[in-house]
Structure formats: C-alpha cells, structure tokens
Image (cartoon, rainbow, N blue to C red; front, side, top):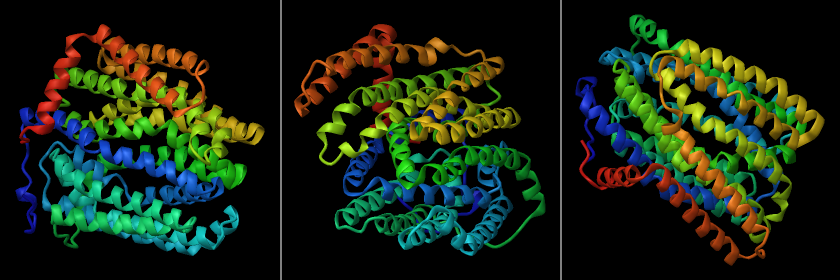
Length: 498
C-alpha cells in the first residue's frame, strides 16, 4: 500500500545480499514484464506520429530535444548516481545537499536556455512552434529534477515495482496526448503540450508514491564525499552527451530538419530493442552490481546472465525488425515517405548490435567503481564519433551519418576485452548463442520476404516463421536452462516481492 507520510532517511532500509539478489532478478522481470504494454504503446504511438507528421516536424523535435538534453547534462554533477553507488548507508545530509545543488544548477541552466534561445532559433531556423517546444522542454527539465531524490531512494533499494508507476503514467500521458493532438493537426505543438503534461503527471506521481519532503540544507562534507564518484561519473555522462545529443544538434546545421528527421527515424527504430529491453536491465543491474561488487563469483554470474537476457531479447527483435522494415514501409499508409531512411536504419542497426553488449559492460565498470576506465572509453567513442560522423554527413548526407555510427559501433569491441581483463566472463554463455540464432533467423526471413508478395498476410507469415526459427535454434543451443529461467521469471513476476 502506498504511504502518504513524510519519508525520513532512517526509514530507508539497507538491504542484505540475499535480498539484493532476489530484488535484482525480480526487478528485471518486473520492469520488462510490466513495461511491455508501454513499449507497445510507444511503438504504435511512434508509428501513428510518423503517419500524421512530416519528417521536417520530426526533425525539429529531434533537434530541439537534443539541445535541451545537452544542456541538461550541466544540471547534475553525478550526485544522484553517487547516492545509488555509495557503499555506506545514506544520511539526510547526503539527500538534502544533492537536492539543493541540483536545483541551483537546473535554474541556472534554464536561465541560459531562455537567454540564448534567440540565437538557437536563428541557428536552427526554428519557427515559432519550434521556439515554444524549446521552452516546454526546459520547463519539463525542471520538473524532472524535482523527482530525483524519491527516484534515487526507490532505485537504491531496488523497489522497481513502485518506481515503474510514475513511468507508466508519464508514458501513457505523453503518447496518448501526442497522437491525439497530431491527429487533430497540431503539428509540432503536439510535442509541446505532451512533454509538459508528462512532466507534471510524473512529478505528482513520484511524490504520492514516495513522499520525501525536501529541506533546503547543505553539507560540504557530504558534497565532498559524493563528488569523489559523482564527478568522474558525470564526466562520462558529459562525453556521452557530446557524443549523442551534442552531435545530433550539430548535425542539424549540416543535414537540416528533413535530414535529421530521416536519421532520427532510423535511430528511433534501430535502437528500439535497446529501449525496449536493455534499459530495464541496466536500471536494475547498476545498483545490484554496486551491492555485490566485492563478490567476484556472484559478479561473474550476474554479468553473464544479464548479458544473455539482453541478447536473448534484443538480437531477435533487432534482426526481425531489419528483415521486415522494407515490407512495413510499403504496407503502412503514408509510410512510403520513410523509404529513404531504410539504408540508415540498417546501418544504425549494425551499431545497435555492439551497443547492446558494450552498454551493459560499461554499466558494469561504473557500478564496480572503475569509473576512470569508462572515462577513457568514452573519450575514445566521443573522438571517433566527432571525427567520422560530421565529415561523412557533409560528404554523403544521411547515409554518410548512419555509416559513421556503424563505424563507431565496431570500436565497442575494445570494451569487451577491457572488462574481460577484470573479470573472466564467458562470451559464449553471455551473447554469442543468441547472436548466431538471430543471424540465421534474419537470413531465413530475408529470402522468404523476396519470394512473397507484399501484403499483411505475408508480414504475419514472416513474423511467425521468424519466431519459430529463433526459439527452435535457441532451445537447441541452450536447452532446458531456458525453460527453467522462464519458470523462475514467471514466478517472480506474479509472486510476492520482498
């Protein structure tokens, strides 16, 4: 039952090792299982939005979102992650200091955003609707920052059953409202109203679920302690922000709204399996790895099983999407306009193969305190991204940009061997078997697709054949262990949680 009384830090229990293990597994199951319909909602909402909106309108949203995401980096200095990763028990000074520092930073960022908005409007050639969207995303950033402490406390104790409720409400609000407004002809303003509504609903929901009462106090000692992990962590986040959102914002000046719209469409669908499955695992395993970082055998087992879980779900989803995308472009009404984005989709998908594994490996490095190693890796990825992608975009347009992302993806092989030096985990047990099964499934679907006529009947036939081929192959490779894991996951999903 949800409580409505004030939450004190003394009420936040420190959970033991066995509870960490159980909550980690159940957390992955809960986040994946109970967000399944949200992912479907997002999938269909995006499909409808790409029908109702033009590529240029999508491009404006991608550009403006990237600008605000880039600025949002400066609203945090890694204190939230430090609270989750901290070995010792948290105290009230840690929470109050983090809250105060973050709010000061967010307000300063919003001041800069409004001050320099005329320059941003001119640089990206934004119309009035784009400018209003920029302001709306800034306000949404402020509302999001107010949710930090309650979210951290729930995440630190792996109470993802509660944490997921605001996410459900936010996604429902955003997707339903955005589709309705786009259908009604609101264009870019569909995003404006939706992000504001999402921020407001999420803020109210998190404080109802975990009514932590902020107090404006500050402790230099707490700040100094948290910054030891927070600053290196935030430097990594800064590089990731430059590599991703900063680069997208820069590409807006090269490719324009239409080009970024095509690239954004390819990234949206090419990375959908990551958002669908991998994000849930990473959210759980960061605090879980942190709690068991001194137990090497448990770490190895947890890493291998988490990588297998990600690969088992991400790889077939990705390869199935890549095999069926050309068919869907012709089948869905008004979707033929996205045909130029198919080749970028394949290239982004190639990047996703590597990202699905390397992201969890860097998450492992962060959780176990090897933040400097991750920082060096982020320097490498950021440098390669800014070397290849803008140059190839300028020379070859959208396809060049996507090819640049594919090249950077190959460099992720480095992190595989970096982690292997720290922990001798098995590649075969972790991800190679699902990868082989998914590749065979893709080849099967490809040859069947070119022989079948373009129809929804063909689509469902291919979808069924792909599922049968993949699960048959993975069963032959993994055996009864797969069935046992499914039974355990089902029990955890519908059983009583600690």
